[in-house]
Structures are given as C-alpha cells and as structure tokens.
Image (tube, rainbow, N blue to C red; front, top):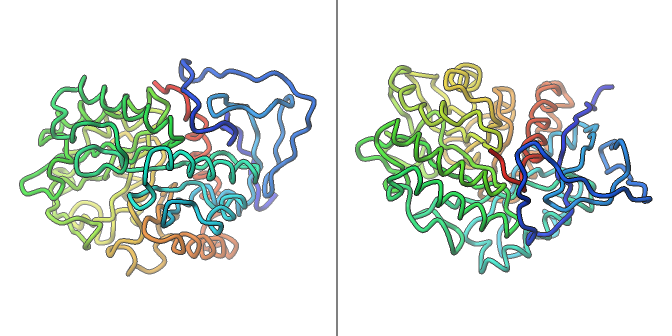
Length: 390
C-alpha cells in the first residue's frame, strides 16, 4: 500500500516519567508488563498491533510493537525541532502529538534548573504519548567544558580526559544525569582530531587519531551504559578547521587520504548500537565534493562506508550560514542518505521544512522508501534507549 510500511521494533512507548531509573539489563533483553484487559487504540497515522495487549510500559520497559507508518508520521520521525524559552510551546506540543516531530533539542535558553528541564521533558513525552507515538528523542549538547547546558557532569572538558577510563567514567556520570531528566541523546562526544589552530580548542580529546578514538569511544560507552545515546561528531572531520561552521561556511582542503586518517574514532565505535553520527556542514572540495558534506551523497555512500559506520546519522544544524543559502537543503540531505534533520535555531524552521518535505515526498521528488528506511532506523534507536546498551 502506497504511503505505508510495516516497521517492527521494541520501541519504548512514551509511558513513564523522567525520574525512572535505568534497568540493569543486558542490551537486547526486556522486561514485560503483565497483560491488561484494556484494548490499545492505534495512534493517528499508524496502525499498531501487538501479540498481546499490555499495560503501558514505563520508559525502561520496551514493548514489542508494530508501527505501520504513514508517510506523514515516517517523515516526522526524521525531524528534530527546537523551541525558545523554558516551556515547550503549544505549537510544538501539537506537532509532537500529530507525529510531525521525532526529536527535540534543548539549549541554554531552555534551562533554568535541572528540575525545570525534567518537567519540560515530561511534557514532550506526554504529548508524544497522547498522540500514540514513541517517545521523542530529547537531545542536548553536554560535552563538558565550554559546551555544557546543564549543571552537573561531565566535570572536565574533553581535552582534560586524558585517560580512557576517565572519559568512560565522565560519560557514565553524564548519562545518568541525562537519564534522570528524561533526555535520551547526548550530542557528544566530539570525535574530531584536532589540528593546529583548530577552532575546537578544549572540545577535542586530542591531536592523535588513536588518542581520540580511545577517549571519545570510552565517553560514548559510558553514556550508552546509562541508557543514553552518544553522538560522534562532526563527520567526516572538523579538526583542522579554524572557523566554526555554526558561524560561517567552512571549506576543508584535505585530500581524501588525509581526511580518512581522522576516521579512527568512527571505525572504532561507529557501529555500536545506541550511537549516532553527526554529519558536518563543512565542504571538502578535494575529498568529497564542492557542496556541504551533509548534502552530498558521497558522504554517506562512500565515506561513511569507508569508516565502517552503520548507525543512524543526524545533521549538524541545518540553519547555519553554509546551509540556509543552499537550494532545497532538506530534500538534498534526505536523498543523499541522512536520517535525522536538525533545525537548531527556530521552531518555525522545522515546521516549514516538514511541510515542504512532505510535499516533496508526495510529488515523488523524495523516494518514499528512503523516508521509511530512515524512520525505521530512528525507531530502532529509540527501542534501545532507557536501558544499558553495550
């Protein structure tokens, strides 16, 4: 049937609260709630079936569910939105309920205290639950050092995590903090290998590919052990950049061979379940092509494959100067192979993009199978979160 595809995954329903503690299970195990006599109604935009009706699970209790996603809801799983202020606005909550948003990113202006953040996150998950959808991916940049939105761990900047054991401990502590608040994705660690005059400064774990691979992957493992997804960034590498891609278009002139020498962190843990890889908006004219990497097919079909990456991908901010002046960037990113589209500056940008992309799919400008495939990868990631992932 056109517009639908059956996606089966042990997806965490937006049931429990932000205060639920991780369940000490091995990855792939699940705890099942007792049967209930209540019939579950299929969510809007989906057809949902279960082998037996169950009471709603907590965030730590995955339930085996089948989602027959419509085009609208599959595309929604790919959209990551932001909002301004301390409370999610009604406009965003309505979009979450309709299944038009799969993730939400938090910034400093969304944070007054950890308790306030937990309350906001509960509202997001409740909106998703009310619409009958899986929990949204709630994301934050909690790297440590200069980039840190919340009070609490990590206590050190990446450059000060000079041992893998230290990095893993910091990652575990950070994951536990985020898990308590209901945040499911940390947009960290930085996996870039720093070069001379790198704009990253103390955000980088080191100047050696081996060093960075050991420490960044240890930090990521610590996050996953607490049931929080890690995000390796910024593929294929920003370590030699002297300007921040958030502020200005950036071109990196490395040859393909030189660029690939920095892939060690991705090769080491870029296939670990419970991990994302963030794709940079910089361009690599001598290695990939003239346009931003996030919009270029070779980034996904050739370079990620060369690095051994198999996990879902997320864009760096699609509202940066390098991207906003591009023609149809969302369409190009999806067609190139991107799974999650991040709009990190305004709420309206993600809403506008969703409407345009939905029109693109319906007109055949984006292959519907590409959208369904990306949605399946997002749902598979959601199924892992909230419990330890090895």
